[in-house]
Image (cartoon, rainbow, N blue to C red; front, side, top):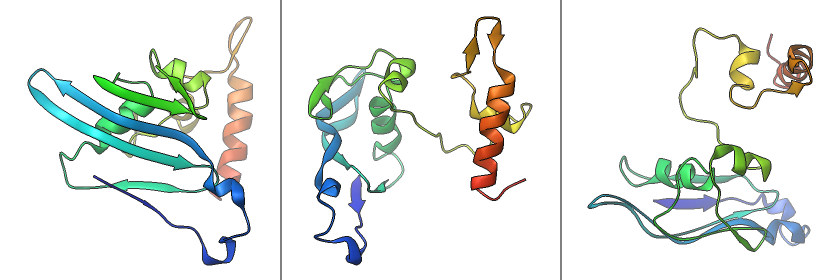
Length: 149
């Protein structure tokens, strides 16, 4: 598993916030019974940078992402958020800390519309239930930003 970060040359030396580590994995390991899916992983995510993670099938990329997003817990090691150790107790707990994951599947639920796929598991609520109008408004803004119908 390899992490790669690229900083555009024109920004080098001009933005010190890019050096700030906002999330880290330190010595993270994950066992499924006798199978070790991760062994001593160290990984940093820096503010203002796109961070990529790539490696061969079975290298542990998905396992690490599931740990960072609270879907599964590490067997050992630490996750640090803004330098503070954190243990997420599920994806909603991670989401409350601003962490979410977009899974690699192209269509999460083919029987749902775009709005419902975007807000699946994180619906906007109001006193009477789901606020579909607000979800629709946000979805339209997002689609405009992506230049999609």
